[in-house]
Image 1 (cartoon, rainbow, N blue to C red):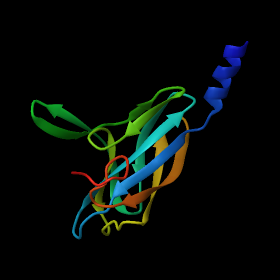
Image 2: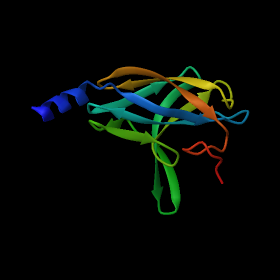
Image 3: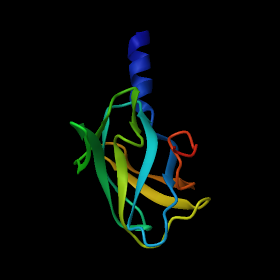
Amino acid sequence: MTSLLVALLLAATPVKIEDPWTRATPPGAKVAAGYMKITSGAADRLIGAASPAAARVELHVTTKQGDVMRMREVKAYDIPAGGSFALEPGGAHLMLVDLKAPLKEGARVPMTLRFERAGEVKTELAVRALGSTAHGHKGH
């Protein structure tokens, strides 16, 4: 009975977005990447995203082929039941395409995430310094 109760509580847990962020962009930049950690009690899929800061938002993954890093668009990210999925530099990320204006450090970028089961979830990406990494530190 206890395991059934735990399973029901996990399934009822809504999608949670942790530490959503992006990097500031130089003038004239047309793209930026968005990062965050997504957790969910029930299995779900992130199937799309939108932001008024960009013409479109694409779901991308970065893979290494030999010595070359390549980015490609994917249709969805699977969020495991009771688990999490990380969007982070060098891996899966949201690509904001055709930015309408440069992203300035300290600003917040509105983002709507579309999930297969949870529907729309609104969040904001915190704009960090241009060289920021997953932990907010300057890159080397």
